[in-house]
Figure (cartoon, rainbow, N blue to C red):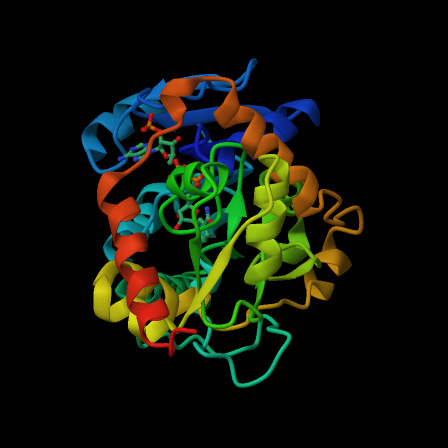
Length: 330
Ligand SMILES: NC(=O)c1ccc[n+]([C@@H]2O[C@H](COP(=O)([O-])OP(=O)(O)OC[C@H]3O[C@@H](n4cnc5c(N)ncnc54)[C@H](OP(=O)(O)O)[C@@H]3O)[C@@H](O)[C@H]2O)c1
């Protein structure tokens, strides 16, 4: 099989590139060559900016593909350009959408692929939903061979799962308290990129996947208290958690608040039976306590990665002091 990834050196796509090559796929990566992640060994590299269509045409020449995966399409215009570029040139086109496009908050759990797409909080999610609608139209009207994949929160060793990244780890290691939204008991799903790759690569060239939509996630359901505790223990400490309502966090910081109220404040767990029906080998095998050890090892390997953001550090202190001030002192 010959496959093109637009991207391919990203957080999720890097593991998919590795696995595709291990499976003997002839893999082309089209990107700008700017990522600090080395492209997977054996991939054929095409350097172009996907938004510069003339340079993309020149890089692709007359190549045709069994499958094309666009990792960096975010608006209906991006998808429309892809339909024009790859119609007749690929047996399958995979659009990487986002599980954040699902109804937020969800009316019932677990989320399945037929859960409606309705996230009034996040433009990014609405744009992904609009991309999906455009592709459904292209499939219905012209047989464009689209498959939609909706990743949920998917990490590699560089990605800490909470807002503020390494600053939280530095605080926990210094014995300082960290803010956890709500009462820390809402449920969340974290998927390791190597697990995700088994599902994604299993869809490539799979005739049953054309015209269909999938999410690909772990079946491990974690509370946010557990997520902070697991990261803290991987970092060798016990955390001191302060629970703060998401609305109050939003009053202090709009961006952090939006990432909670439009996404992480709501329990999100998924039914993965559809991907398992088409890709029977898919089974998420890396629990977060193992993934967290990989993350901490990556940060510990180079002090330059241990960036503490002074704004976020001070913001946590301000929120914690407001929260603690709201309780009667002893
Ligand atoms: N991670 C998550 O939790 C999550 C959840 C839901 C959905 N998603 C979706 O997953 C996709 C991101 O996948 P990822 O995490 O693997 O990607 P990523 O880490 O954002 O990396 C982006 C990749 O695309 C390339 N790229 C960026 N802009 C480009 C351009 N203009 N032209 C050509 N190549 C370009 C980058 O290489 P160069 O910089 O060298 O060009 C790199 O290979 C997005 O569609 C996102 O919406 C992610």
